[in-house]
Length: 261
Image (tube, rainbow, N blue to C red; front, side):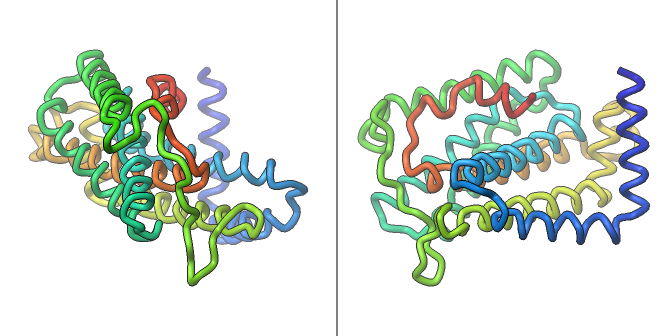
């Protein structure tokens, strides 16, 4: 395990020293990738990799940098997906309005969950977040007038950009996911490199020492949770419009475990 950690550290150092080469090259590969992918099926898999990359980035801000283990991120994923799907199917909202609203609502849910629970730590926090995810799933399952219960929400419209419906055939969904992934990567990297990121890392390493140094630990943990929930909700909104159908089984405890893994 130590050898693997050392190897990754060396690779990261090598890449960091050559960012001016690697970053443009990676961007070019991602932009040109749909032109060489032989089928929509493979492009769909690659796009789903993008969805889970956003989910992993969002959770990493909480677990990787702040040291708080959350087993309830499927809840924020579901809130973003259901909010955007309901606004689109029942009120006729375009994706580019419904998705940000779904992300904001997921962020608000992160705030409401974070304020009382982030005073906990370890297994207590994990169990609480797991319970929250199950509450959200049961609401989606039983609030039939809003979520259509176990039947789920069908015929969720594709994102429309300047009159063009984005799908995998015209590569629009792939590039939309690439934009969302870029936004999440840039935003979270900016947080990590700022004084907020240093405060979060300090909390992870030694919360008592961080408090003694003047870090407002509770506020910073809630901040990380809200940002994490926001991007989780944004990924959920994209997923709903990509698949065109969601139901409570899409957001089970297993989903949280996959994100954590």
